[in-house]
Length: 306
Image (cartoon, rainbow, N blue to C red; front, side):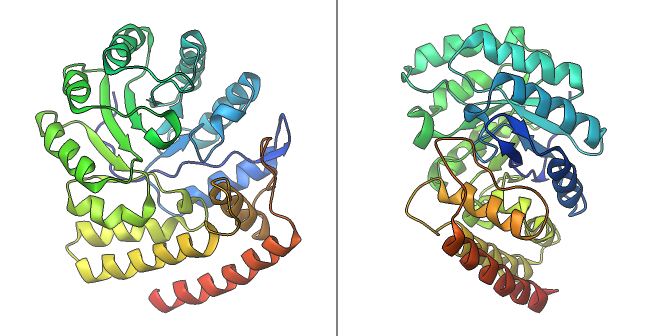
C-alpha cells in the first residue's frame, strides 16, 4: 500500500508515432522532463493520455516502459477504466507485474449505470485487483458520477485509497473532502488545474494537472507555496496556470483541443511527437504557429516569477 499521495501527479500524455506505435524516444524524454520538475507521481492511461483510444497491446507496452524507466522514483498510477470488466482486470494485472503503485478507475462508459450497479461493480472488481485503487469522477465523459453514498461505501474498503475529481464542481469537491476525513489515508486530487489552489483551500491534497506535462515546476510551486503558508505566492503561480489554460487549451473549437494543445507544445519543445489517436488529429500549421508564439509568451511569464 502507498501512503497518502499529495502534490502534483501529471496525467501523462501518450507520445505516438502512428495509430499503434509509441514514440519511445519521446516517451523517455517526456518522463525525464516531468520527473525533473519535482512531481509527486505519474498517472498514465487517463483522459489526457488517450487511454480509451489505445489498443490493449499498446496500453500494456506503455505500462511496462513507464514503470521500468521510473524505477520507483515516484508512484505510478495506471488507468484501468474500460467497458469490459475482464480487460480492466487484465490491464490491472500488467500494472501490478510491472511495478506500478496503484490503479485508477472511472465508471464504465457508454451505457450509464445506476449507483446500485456501480456499487456492485466495485464490489466485484476490487477483490480481483492486486493494487490499491483510486476512484476517478469524470461525469462529463462517463455520464455517471460517484454519489456520496457510494463514496461512503468505498471508504469502508481498505483497498480503495483515494479519489480524483474532474467534475469541476467545487461544492461537490468540498463535500467529498468532508466525507474522506473518516479515512486519513485517503488522497483527494482535483483534475481541472484552473481550480488547483481553490481545491487545496477546500481540503484537497493536490492535482492531476495536464499542464504539468509542459511546465511541471509551475504546478509544483502552487502546492509547495500553499503548504508553506505563502498564499500570495500560491495565488501568483495559480494565475500563471490560468495563462497556460488560456494559451493552449482553447485553440480550436473542440474538446480534443486540450490534448492537441499539450501535445503540440511538447512537440514544439522537441520533447515528443504530437500524433493523436484517431479520430483526432494533431494541430495544423496555423494552430502550431500560434502554439509556438504562446510558448514564447509563457517563457516571459515564467521568467517574471522565478
